Length: 175
Image (cartoon, rainbow, N blue to C red; front, side, top):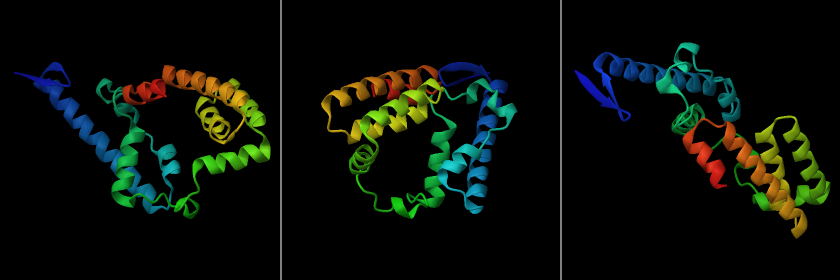
């Protein structure tokens, strides 16, 4: 009367609970994404608004150890909305290096670097990562690039240290 699932031997009752909870979780997330799409929300708002019910969020087998709710949301979004994210400016975007180069030229790569540090000190690691990329991708100054890459490395390590998802954590570490 035992079942092997996720590398563990479980009794049938636990296996049934794991499967039913997982199905309920996936149905909930899909229903929420579809509802929010129908309300006209963009993907970044959907990611922010979908909150897994507390009783499911506490289940050990639904923790974001391997995957992550954000990954599931992206998959559902692609299924129903396709590749287009709803922002016409991103339909044929300029290269990210061109955008970053223009921002770095306007603001100065050193100011962007300082902004990323300030945001990091405020505990907003992901935002700091997004900001530092403007210097990493946009500066022509090799010394500044080196400083920016060192900060990005530090930010990626900090982001990995707080990330429960195995996949995301290892992507941050590899970065």
